Amino acid sequence: MTTLILATSSSVICCVFAAPMGWLVARTDMPLRRTVRALVTASFVTPPFLGAIAWELLAAPNSGLINKVYRAVTGVPRPPAICAGCPYRAFGLTVQKLKKRGKGEKGS
Image (cartoon, rainbow, N blue to C red; front, side, top):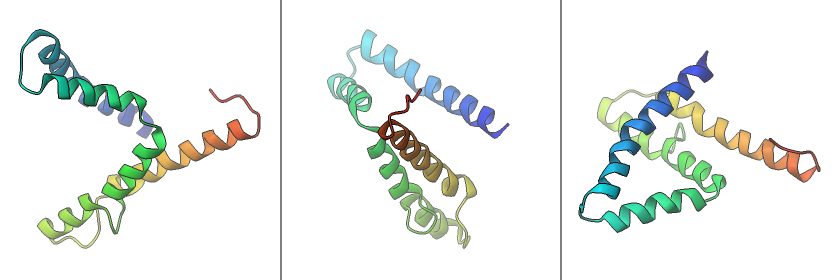
């Protein structure tokens, strides 16, 4: 059930941001249009490993920037659970996929 919730919520959030951004870039003459287009294109060519490292830097339970700000603002000693689990899951899945490919197994 957690996977369904995660997949649905991330899809909805992406659509909420991507659809208006795509329309603005394609149909208007907004400022920084070329920059937005370049950043969107860059997101397709960056390896997943860099994304995993970025999430680890942002959301690590003790040293992540998001959790440091959260603790400073709220005074809560423990970070939010969702920030503690997601980056490590993504990193673990990436490593497992790379191990499978290294052993000659076909990854899907």
